Length: 286
Image 1: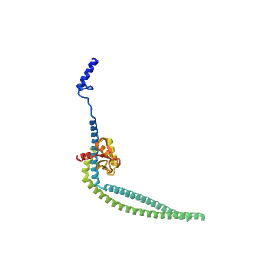
Image 2: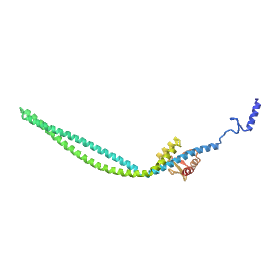
Image 3: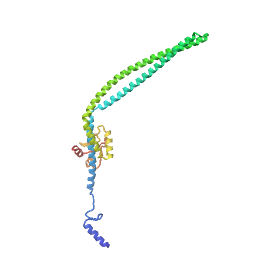
Image 4: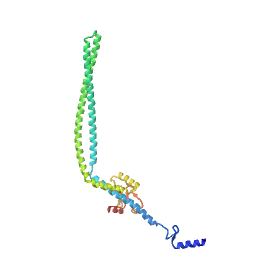
């Protein structure tokens, strides 16, 4: 085929709108710029909708758990206090055991000293000179002092043990009261949990299902913001031109960007993810 013939064929193909890349009739596949923007907008809008849906579910879970009020913390505090009291009782009992062992040892020591005194007094009856007598007298005096010291220590240890026993009784009484309080608080908490358990289980299941629809990067960011937020809100709507989390004013241009859904935008003051009224209403309507 000559160059002139190829040129003529190309012109004819052009007139027929034949796509040179495929050899078929019709215009080449070309996605309009508006369609690309619409696709991006839809993707971001879907992400924001998923995040706000998750936030709505988690907020309901938080609200159910708030019904329990301070009870879980009170139960935990009582459990910690009871554990501390039990440790104190155990410590006192160990100290009483040690004191009783010391009393027993001193009693044995005093008995040994008394036996030695009797032995030395018997030997004094058979001494041959004053030197031996004086030496035995000194031993008797020493063992007498040892016996007296052992008796004194026994009394001190016994007094300390008595004080510890009284402390144990006081702590055990306090422990019994705290256990009663704990049983009452647990019963109250269990009643509240039983009332909301089914609803909470359903919401937790929905939360897990919703989390599976969100990409990991966004989900991690959501959870980080939620953990740091005092009210647990990570995704908030713009209401009256202000952030629904910290209530600071949103600049008009930023507000426009939020409505266009071209990217995920966070509040420059509190860091929460911002959504417009359109997404908020679409989620609330579900």
